[in-house]
Length: 88
Image 1 (cartoon, rainbow, N blue to C red):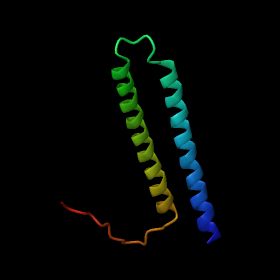
Image 2 (image 1 turned 90 degrees about the vertical axis):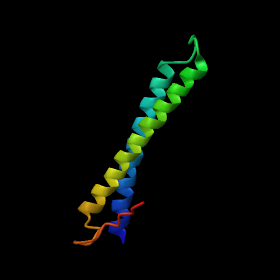
Image 3 (image 1 turned 120 degrees about the vertical axis):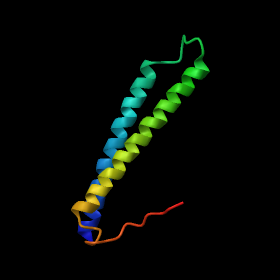
Image 4 (image 1 turned 45 degrees about the horizontal axis):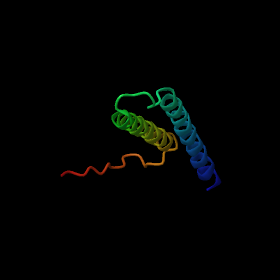
């Protein structure tokens, strides 16, 4: 169980680092392209928010891939395990 906690903790730290890096870059960009002196600051702010959320969604996808790789490397899914695919 200690091994599982260490692996999970390590993967969590990697994901936190990814998230912190992306957030730091986003904050820097947002400060650099300030809404001051823009002709339509509300529209500009909406564009910044849409971009920010899109980048964060991509970062979360990377974090999901990190967890998937950890599960694959740790053989957390039994060989021949079935994937459950939901159809609408």
